[in-house]
Length: 118
Image (cartoon, rainbow, N blue to C red; front, side):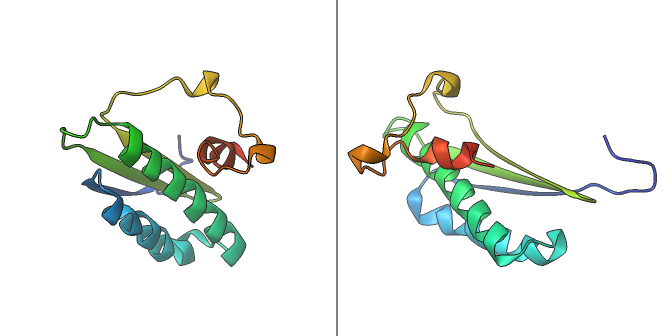
């Protein structure tokens, strides 16, 4: 919900669920950064989280023989930036995923820990 007199701006991007298109999500955030007043650190963190989310959709949402898409939606309001990554794939229960164990020194599984970080 927005306050009276404020305008919510939404940017949407849809791309094929293929790793070669992940750069589009990162580039879109770079373009939005000045409007959203993101500093370099915030932008880097946001790019990492969005790249992880989009990469999970590319890697896990669709069987190899199915063409799918990934959608990125960024909402801009005064003092609020929202980011949604969606697909129409198989889905998974993120509340029951195991946490990433740094002692195992694997990158796989780290994405949800990064996305949950504040």
